[in-house]
Length: 305
Image 1 (cartoon, rainbow, N blue to C red):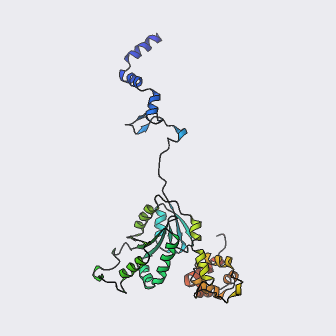
Image 2: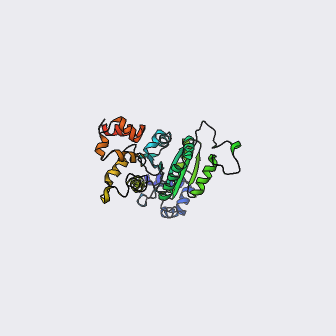
Image 3: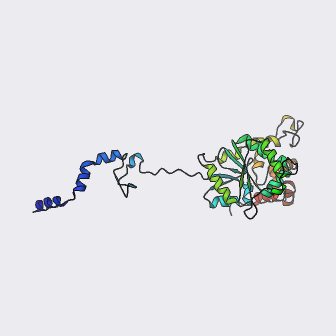
């Protein structure tokens, strides 16, 4: 009786199903789909996966997220926007650049007010551009505008056809001519900068934070150890004894210390220990108001909360 029911059921089976499986064997289907045993839902979903060869994995491009950010930039809004946008921020004391996106991208960020001040002291901006061009393949000057203000560097009525000494656009042209490798980016707001950074990081390796920190250290030390009239030492200093390079390098790593205020510190202090014992007022006088406060807090803050 069971055999009779089976025979009767087979007679009533749809011919389409049997003809389909007669036409395509399971092995043929796997070969035709590159190891995937058929599909359903219009061919968008596989019936089976060959996980031994990794074909079940989706080919998703990994988003580049790491950015080295100079600690002095945390007074601006951009680091917070980058973090909220999914970027991994690595705070660091950078000698060259404000934001390191990859091993080839170095960004010096300027708000429009900062940019005008930098142009008044053009030697400082030229020095920054020169260092970026020396160590990075793609040096970038980022001009970040205030989203609540007009997106223009200068009023159109003030533009002229000639190079003028006091014109901000003329100074920018001179800077671009002096450093042809320098890329100048314009951003309406920090959120627009986030989009630009994400695009720049595509197809590039993640930034090496340790390497970014080391870049420019030797130049800063050479500058401090007497490489010119602005240094602390000259040919008559120490008579070949040399300076304590390890101490100088440690000094440059302290919060708030730059190659500029480090000169004043080294003129007044013989050791790091002497610097650590100075009063708040003395540190502010040597390093500046904000840098002096950072140093004072750093030397007296306990390791744990």
